[in-house]
Length: 407
Image (cartoon, rainbow, N blue to C red; front, top):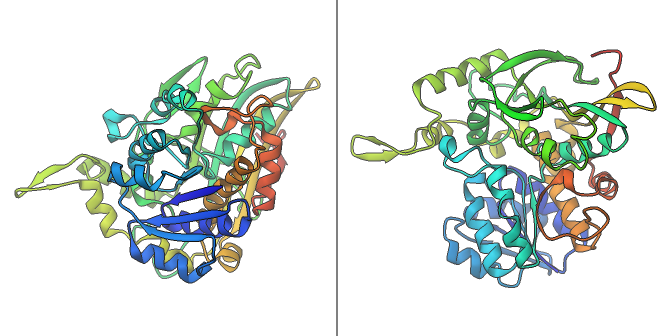
């Protein structure tokens, strides 16, 4: 089998190491537009016989179609703005597809969101192909944990994803930066959050519904805010039987510090989060691209980060007549992730799950309702037990905290 990893930034740097080491694929192509990114991966893993490096422009649909001609699985680790090109090339070249995230609605971002891409399912089915949508940490692992937890309760009232992170880069206190994609951070934090409530999707404001969530140690309690994210869109609709179990609420909440929020609000008021071109002295410029260009590249600053990343899914309901509020989560320290794979906790947690999922696909162990499937699916659609075990083999170890008496 031939796997093609497209995108070798901070996340792809991690995924590439797992793919190459797994032994699940006879051939692995590692591709990016940036020669610098390619060289960074090459320095890390060398040039094994089954690995091919390629420089490619994801904005060139014809080049993508040609590149995927003999590929079994394309893993798209690029920003969501490239998803359309990559998915269309997969359809034309008959390659299976996996991505790590989608964008927001076109009217706000110019990029299709989860709902639109899931609408491509029949096209993939017609060609006998599988499309795995949103297989990173969140979305991805969080969706699988939602399914794993919900399957073990007779009633489920609430599913809430919680993303907590204390990662900081010493010496950069005076800079505005993130340890994940700056463009995605600006987009999703400043978009009115979508939640599922009382049987329908609703949009709220930004940075709303603040709560102090009791993350397990070593992170501890953190203030989190509702943010627009894929899980709240797909889990209520694609987790089997969840509405029949009584789901009333599903949302995603980030832990964000006040300074970060204040800066983003200023960017929003100035229109600097705009993803569409504007005319500046005769030149067409995308405001958000200017902001991102002025921010540090996460791949270049993550090497000094310290702290913890704790991300998981709260599943609240009833099991055997007793109320339960269980938090299924992963906890990783920045220092340990850097020592193992030369990456931040964000990149480690996001980059390893797609390699685990790719291995299941290659071995024919990825199923929906017990059978191999074609079409496009979010990760809560897949049978979770083999996925949780595969995660464990890739260092993504599920832990469970009982928060029944704390929430």
